[in-house]
Image (tube, rainbow, N blue to C red; front, side, top):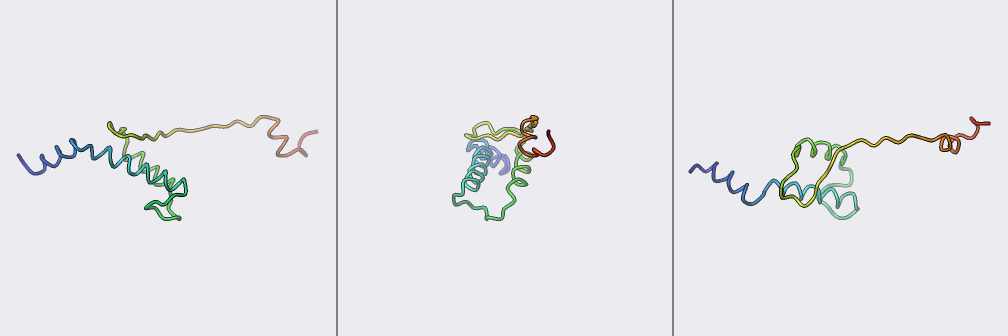
Length: 90
């Protein structure tokens, strides 16, 4: 058996992909929660998350955490518009 085949088999057995997935998501959680993390205070977290979602396009099978990408649309009601700019309404 080749060394590369052994390495691939070992990665599968130890669930290395799931470990890395969980590790990075925990680091993001620590960063956003203000706890000590390996990321500096000036770190561009949204860019990291965007790249993370692209890299881990398939959810890791044995991961404890998960992340989803989506869009949120919010529609302002006339009342909210009035509260922000009452001079525009009679």
